[in-house]
Image (cartoon, rainbow, N blue to C red; front, side, top):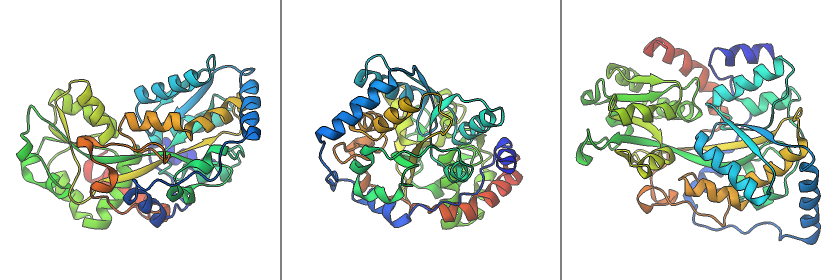
Length: 369
């Protein structure tokens, strides 16, 4: 654990060693509207199992949840939905960046403190592989894992790690500062000198979305793309979500941003618009696992079932994130579906393992942080 904690403590992801099949995830994205049937219907035995699990969870009390895929506000919505399904049971969500969540967990483990029961991030830093290798994950096979869309089941690490949803990294701009016809249409457009001093980016050493995006951009356009971006003197912030603050204030007028976060900002009356790049939006899966030292193990199991169930899929879809349940289809900005926009090829974890450490090192040299 010493090497892992040291790297994450400096804000850099450890290399991912666990491979998620590229073709399987991409197939999910481009066939989103093809509804795959669940593997098995609910049975009386399954219902009895859930009831027994719920009764055991009620003896344990509130559970802390470390999460990074979406915002604190959405995490709180998920917690409320869980309580609505199981009155009296409470989840305490603690949201941070992907790297920040892992660093927090590593600090807990180093201090021999058990706080969180469930850990849910994009896993871009090899987090779940590291935790499993170090014996930090609890074995549990959720029944609802069988009901995920068929095309993402190959991303499951059986008995330990399960996909719970997906997000898209797109572009956004301040509509009070930029006209629609002048907004960037592709990732390459962000390197246009007209955006000098006007661009905001997230940091690949902290943000799972931006880590995956950087791997894709270097693969497609080479490192020169980032050198051209650097000439535009972007505001680089720790989390990709932080770029929204810069957009809302007008400090920057264009940014990379998860489309779901931008859509939420629009609903709140902020002058933000989403652009799905013509050269492909970045899709990234979010995963969840139970920690072996979970203070409330039955709560952790019940909440994991919830994260893979229809109620959580609705929370995801209502906030613009991609549902992984066939019963719930996500509408993107403008009413589009994921199969109606261009998507970048999904990075395998093997690609991330090879590329990300070098990218982060070059990023720090180029952007000075």
